Image (cartoon, rainbow, N blue to C red; front, side, top):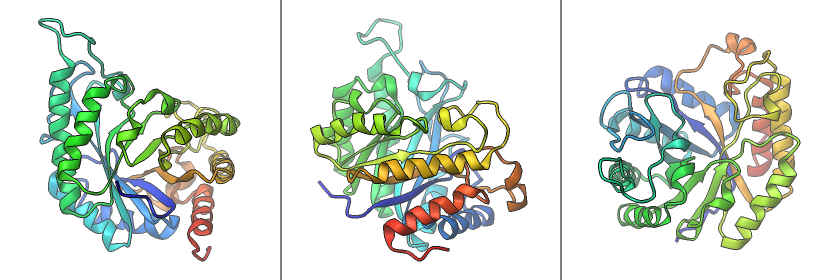
Length: 319
């Protein structure tokens, strides 16, 4: 298995992008701005395919609104032209709005009911398609799934998928488990890295890092946060995973979240980095940043916090 040889100072790019929204001047300028303003050395190119509901067994990744293969290849090439290493991250979502963590089926097959075997067959086609693209384009990392909480118990199916991915892809392979689920995944040993979503309350980082550390020590694998972030609104630092939380725009609270996260994680030598959430393919105007209360840090106080943290890790000059 390959090793992670540097700190991941990363940012997720492009998620929520739909077909036709990548591979254009706006998307190009967005990625250039991300690289310049955040000091990243990695990016996760993230996109989603839609199944109809949490109980559907077909993932038609070739259909709209999923970005096309050419758009994915364009994004990878663009990132590499900026000197960034790339993790390709295909995600599945539900068209009816149900969160993917709730995709679930009976543990035992029942006639006339949707089955795990059918879902994993479709999911395997989706993942292997983009694993091949990751190999062809030289992506340094591939993420086989994101926050699929109800699927995590299906160990045999995941191990089989990992073995199939390794037949077509030669880089680092990881899985992005959901927050609080690091110790509920029993197949980390088949992967190169452990990664999870770091949406932990600002005052709870030490306790959660203690818990995660026991998993990292058990499996003796490198660890990084494949996602982590906080909206820029009042109250979000206490529940950063809730993108629907109502509150006033608050850039200082978002910046404080990042300062605390970097400080607490920096005290743990086993935390090998972050792929922060997130940077869209179509940026708002910088003049609009003052009123933006989402996760994106463009033009906000947190932008400088992230740049300085990443610069310190990778020996760059600060702004």
